[in-house]
Structure formats: C-alpha cells, structure tokens
Image (tube, rainbow, N blue to C red; front, side):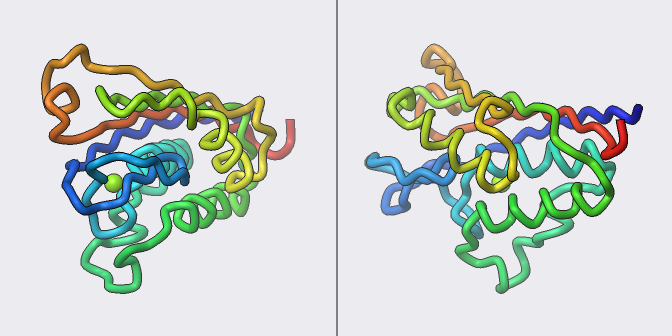
Length: 161
Ligand code: MG
C-alpha cells in the first residue's frame, strides 16, 4: 500500500483595499491578502501539501507569479488543477488537516463553507477535510495584522489498496 504525506505552508501580506478570500470564502474585513492571484493563503497551503505528497514541486513552479495567466487567479481553480495532478498519478486523498493563523477577523462562522469548497474542489467528502483557525496571541506578523499564514498536511494513498 502506497501512503504519501505532504506538508504545505504559506503566508500573505494584509493590505487595505484587497478582498479577503480564505478557503474560497469572501470574508468581510477592512483588509485583504495581497498577491498575484486572489492570495487565498489556505488554498495555497493545501495545494503545496498535495504537490509535496506527490513530490511534484510547489505551486510557485506550477503557477508562476510572473505569468500574467495567473494574475488575479481564483485559487480554487489552482487547487482543482493540483488535485487532478494527484489523481492522474493514481493517488486518492485520505484526509487533509489545516490551520489558518489570523488574529482578526473571527473565522469560525466561515469554517463550514471553507470545508465545503475544499471538499468540492478535491472531490472528497467534507468529513475528510479539516479547517482550524487560531490566533498568534497578538505576537508576530499575524498578531499585528501585517499578514496571515496557513499550514496544511495531507495524507494520500495509491489508488490500489
Ligand atoms: Mg501563496
């Protein structure tokens, strides 16, 4: 039985005048994450975890931020593409666990919608997708609302058990 583990980490800067999109959910807030794409830090961490589990590099290699094709990209599209790469190699997702670190706004009202989006994009059941949120207790770049970070781990199994 082929089991593969993957880990992803991402961080984006918070800026005024940008929409805040986390896990594909638009969240009302005074600032949003800055980046070449929609800067969905959670979906980027998951995408990197999936690519890592397949030893296929990282999302920067697959979707370069120098490529105009990905300017303003919906990170759900990128996640779907990464999931297809894994499926093409005969890997199936066992489960995904994630943590978003943000001191504000409160993310708990949006967690369910984020899980639904991620499960849809990965074509798995929502029970296989965990999204957690925590603060950094006022410390560091997440604490002073300079940015947000996300971490993700994924377990894959080869198609034939
Ligand atoms: Mg990113």
